[in-house]
Image 1: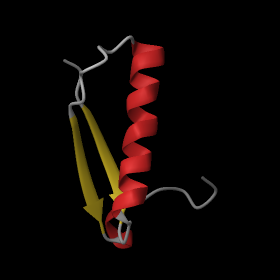
Image 2: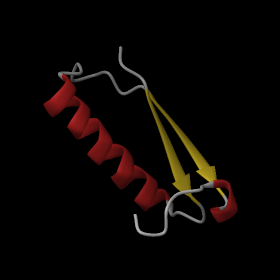
Image 3: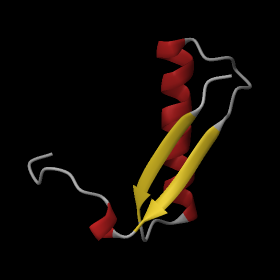
Amino acid sequence: MPLVRINIAQPASAEAVRAVSAVVYDAMIRVANAPANGKFRIISGHSPDELVFPEEG
């Protein structure tokens, strides 16, 4: 089964985490042909200073 790691900035509501997870899972099924019941995800919340990326996106 495919495994995906999702890192998300906190605070994030449970609803937001579920929405991000669902979108990633849908993409895994559509693009990577992941099995329909292969929901193997690790979701980690981080404080804003723990996620480093360009400000331009």
